[in-house]
Length: 149
Image (tube, rainbow, N blue to C red; front, side, top):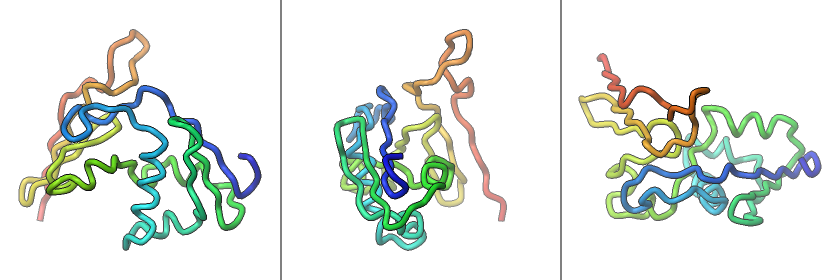
């Protein structure tokens, strides 16, 4: 926290998107964070998550600064939880077919959904975390979630 209305985040280096076109396993950078928040500003259902943000600035490839309209001591907690906006690469959003045609993620699993088939969560083979013995996480390669109607 620089002041109650200004927050700087240093991104973990080496966090990569899944190794699929158009991102091809490239590293997530501060510009992806800025782009994602700008993208969601006027999107129904997401605008409330970005309403407090006045501006997002890229300071360097791994540093992003958030300027808020008002002080918010809970800002970091509200933006690193599971309800926070997803960080997306511009080239995937703007690709032909958009995100609906790409199984893409930064985290442990990428999610794909097909009508009537539920969701398939597929392991990110480049996920950065390891267990205490140095084995790459997660242990499970994929999870299928079925939707009951």
